[in-house]
Length: 76
Length: 176
Image 1 (cartoon, helix red, strand yellow):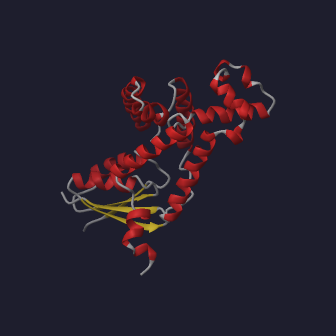
Image 2: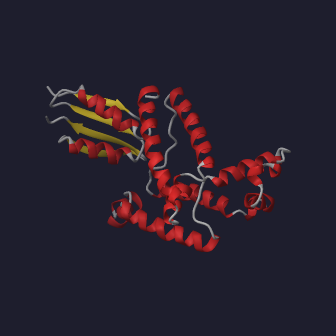
Image 3: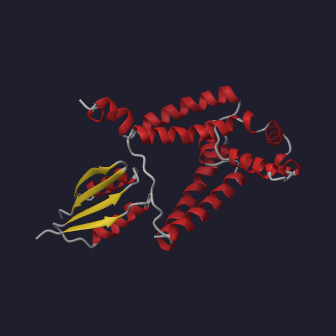
């Protein structure tokens, strides 16, 4: 059963969300999904850019004004 | 159709502009600033002026300092209402506020922990001090410096890379 892991990066500025995501992703099992919560607009550019380069599925969802969830599926 | 679904709203107000669009606009505006005010765009020397005016208002005499002899001294004597740099900096703040409001992304962010506060204070002090002794920040020394064909802009570029590299290592080690 695929799990969902959440990572709270609210209030963090670049490059902290990206580094935290990279560290967290290393401990996520293949098939699981990591949801990164951010409120820093640069993070919705550099985190998906990194995730897609790694070959993961990635989507960004604006959940509130200036607040996003980056959904990354560890496909491999 | 709601405004937020309009493709024009999305490409002009919601989504970030491309780096190329940003670079071209900055180049045009910096040329305009240079033409109108006689010196290229800078941000941080205004902070020194603000500090001096505040100190003066509290009864200090910054006009006797070496830094405020010559041109900066004239600016100091003329006062804040005649200072273009002040209005340019206020313009940045108002413009940034407007952009985040129009994109519907304005929010007051919470402070995560005391480490973040410490990092912000130490970083701010280092940047302020560094900007004064290197004749400007990444705007005045780097952007305007290189655009003015000055070698100090290129020198700044090399050392800001080294500084950013060291700063990132420290950020990960001590502040995360």
